[in-house]
Length: 128
Image (tube, rainbow, N blue to C red; front, side, top):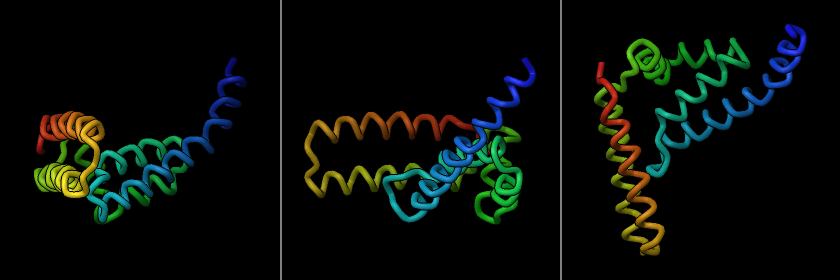
């Protein structure tokens, strides 16, 4: 049974690595694109890399920008007020951009619901 579990873990490692890489790319894009939130993707990347690559996980945890986010989350489940403001502001900017671009009402409704849920989650986390 132990051998089966080791084999499964070995096979899952590349999938965790791929998921971590994708999450990190999306998080990095979220720094410049108002549509994507940075913090949740960085936290997901840290989670995935912890299961696939200790070297990359350590790099991410020691990163000057992403490291404090990960540490706050792991220690207390907290998101710093600065990141909360940025996240909610970017969500609002994305919605505003959609309105200006004349996105169909059906898409706007979906976007409003998704943003409301995401903002509620972000704002409900402890600050420190």
